[in-house]
Image 1: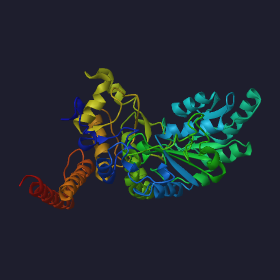
Image 2: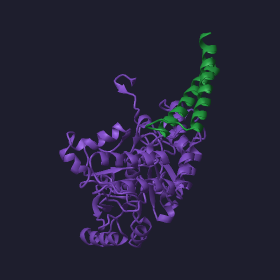
Image 3: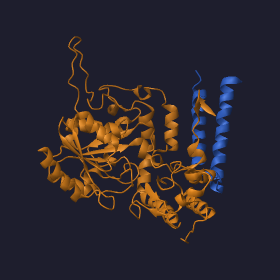
Image 4: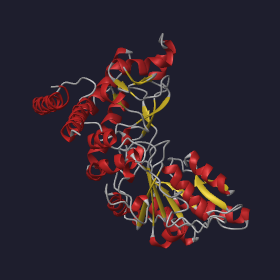
Length: 394
Length: 60
């Protein structure tokens, strides 16, 4: 069934339980689906755009209120919508980093954080994780000292992930920020996997800048995201244009330079806004989501030779597993080789794990119901038993 | 202009979104509980009403 010439209708979420690590938190709520239908046209939120002609000032639909609510939701002073977390990184880097400035990132920083530094001409340096794959405050302090010695000046910005994309581990941002601030290094907290999934308090964490992802964690269409900051940095980060045409004499009002004026002008902003009440509620139920995740992990670990590589018990549902001594052993002699696992899962209505992976793979069961979580565990066990693997009682 | 028809289109689409949500919530087996069946039956009845409005407004 096509939804346009050569475009298959996507039925993944309707037909399967989707465990894709980056897709779980971005699945639309029913209200967002409705908003997408009503606001699909290009400049659909601009019908009632009045002075001062900026997205965050539009009252109908209530985008102005949404911006205020977003800032309050993450306990920061000012928030803006951005076309994806990466555009938040870019705006901050462009504001804070100058050519030749050292910048601190971590071993888990997203590539777009590196690119945002590269665009400014900054010099990236990484903080390594400890043996548990956690970025510690001590490691950050050590790297600030190293970089200062090496570059002759301290880093001008630290990027730190609240939860990383590789292990889904929760890093001690509050301790890290406290240390960074002792060296006068401002902190960008990357909440792409946390804002909209679990409770996030930007000020408590010590973030000077907080970035979230709409399509990754706020049940919103792509590309969407959030950039928030404190009153200390708001005027600088969200500075308004001073440009003037030398022939026409035109000026451009209160358009914000880093935002390139307005950001999400239709389906993305309204989709994000429609999901927001549900997102606020689901964050309060985070413990239940975690409990389901831990139950699946426990079940997986009952399969002989299977271990969890992420911190355990899980503090975030994005989880990295190692099945080198279980499913990968089966793959070595199976006619479908490494594809046997995803094939067996798909036959049972489960998808989202990288096809061909039987050694190390990630999954994210965020948003599943109790019944779906139980089903996922049961099906892994069924596949393991069919393949002749030992399974302990849980 | 038929505002009634336009609204019926969106009401119908929104009701279908509710059913889409139900498909997602019950994937992959789509074995609905009694409560979910009652809810879906009501949604389908409302959808039929919107289709009737569209027939009245546009083709009768």
